[in-house]
Amino acid sequence: MTQPRILVTGATGKVGGAVVAQLHAAGVPVRALVRGEADFPEGVQAVRGDLGDPASLDTALEGVDTVFLLWPFLSAEGASDVIDAIGKHARRVVYLSSAGVENEQEEPGEAITMFHTELERLIEASGLEWTALRPTGFASNTLGWAEEVRTTGAVRAPLARLARPLIHEADMAAVAVEALTTDALLGARPLITGPELVTQERQVALISEAIGCPVRFEEITLDEAAEQMRAAGYPAELVEAIVPAQAEMLAHPEPVNDEVERITGTPARSFQEWAVDHAADFR
Image (cartoon, rainbow, N blue to C red; front, side, top):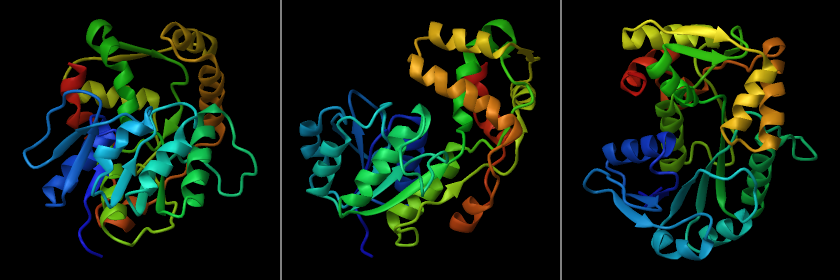
């Protein structure tokens, strides 16, 4: 396979930014899709465009062979037009999906995974080469606790014993780079996870260790958590999906596997490593 020119969407986010950084470090030509001003290392080309406006993508896609697609919306509305625009230029899409998508599901599921299911189907029907990466929970989602940690020294959340194999964005990026630059994952839907289940209470303890300051976990009820999310502006359908799904994980936790190591040759990073990498975000 000849070296591709790759367009990375979500390039200013945690996962997309890690994909850009790893491709650039490997000497692979990479272009970053941005909606505004952004700083990237010399050699990374930033091009304006918005997935919410498919007509704005033509310049960004010019000369592109492969696209890393991170869908930023909570519905698949407009996705068909974006995939059509990609198909006019590129031959391959690597899509960051979700572990909650099930292969044999006849109808899309609840709000957390419904749009991922629809995006996967659209991409598979497009005629493009494809890979759908299905990660478990993102370690970076715990950055939602950062302001609370800085201002109160506490995290108020439900389900202290909820354990998840949270995955480091650098590991998602490493698998994505393999899919973007080789044929090893063509037509695959790898489930990728962190190396172990870590409870939310333990996650807070590890953040506390990483920043060198005491941080306590204060457990609240599911109803209080739902009210917090609504007050923070989360759509009602998302609140109604996320809170029960988290409670269900107490009895049926997400699986843990070694796919990151199998694909990349390097073991998945632990949540402790993630906390150390992001200590500055919590100080």
